[in-house]
Length: 102
Image (cartoon, rainbow, N blue to C red):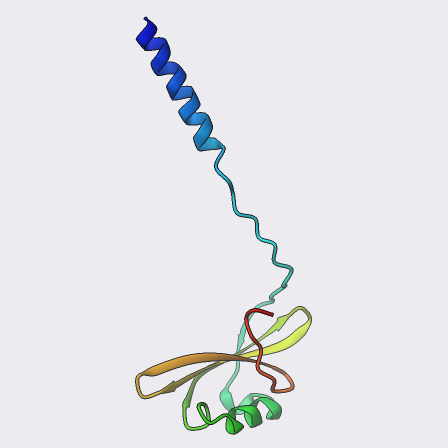
């Protein structure tokens, strides 16, 4: 009987510790709206100029370009490919590169 009570007690504490696990909370205040695909030739001229002035990007092929609003600002996400390498960069409407950290 004592063993049964000990097993029940350990089981109860075991379940309580499982339920007490921490849950990650997202503290992001960024608001993203729906992403829209944009043809590379329809990118704003400042974004095209920024790409043309970047030595790494200017000879690469644009695989895709997307437009979205982030915190009320229009943003452009451009994916490049050159040989076997693929990379993505983000720009604001003025052609400035945008870091994910900001």
